[in-house]
Amino acid sequence: MANLELTTAYREAYSRINGLVIVGEGLADRHFRLLAGLLPDEREDLEQLAAMEGRHARDFLGCGRSLGIRPDLPLAHRLFAPLHRLFAEAIRAGDRVSALVIQCLIVESFAVAAYRCYQPVADPYAAPILREVLEDEAEHLDYGERWLAAWFPDVAAPIAACCERALPVALAMLQDVRDDLTVIGIDPLDLVGEFVACFEETLEKVGFQPRQARGLVARLAGRACHEAAPASIESC
Image 1 (cartoon, one colour):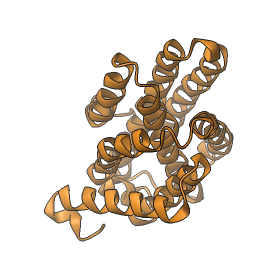
Image 2 (cartoon, one colour):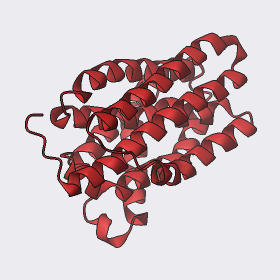
Image 3 (cartoon, rainbow, N blue to C red):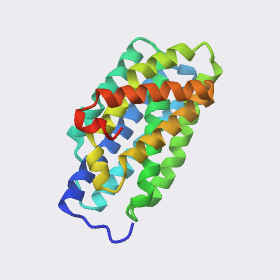
């Protein structure tokens, strides 16, 4: 992105988005380590995925530092709290399916969609980091897809039930930062579209028929829009 103009509006918006990315990657590190406790036979692989997420958090912290912008981490923690709470409940209950759906399908699909949409407007420091991170996130998606596909169709109902709880929560976070996304050059509708396409694809790889995947995501995305603030509904 040439001639990046660091206006006050841009700096404030970037602070919030950068904070969300850093906290999201940091939580992903923690989530994969917790998953290793539920899947001890795959501990080594999960700890490697966790280490990758931790590196992403540090890299994105560097992106903000390169622009002289401090991330709004307290806000990010508040926005992520509901989704993290659902993940923690799944871990406490020993619910491997829900934990994998939340981290490996929903969070990773959201990350892939966001980074793809940010690529065209990324500054020169962030651009090569994004390319590497996207390759890693595809690997993380693949891990969840393969694990759940191996147990399909036995896990189909639990996957759908988890999506019912967690997908609207994830989409609500987008509503909270949609104005900031616009300021840094990302169209929120493009991001929703990219996320929906990515998540439908990952559900199909797990074992859902295309029509089932489309129906599930469309219904939950629609519900999330109707539950959003009135000013945001029109954009969904």
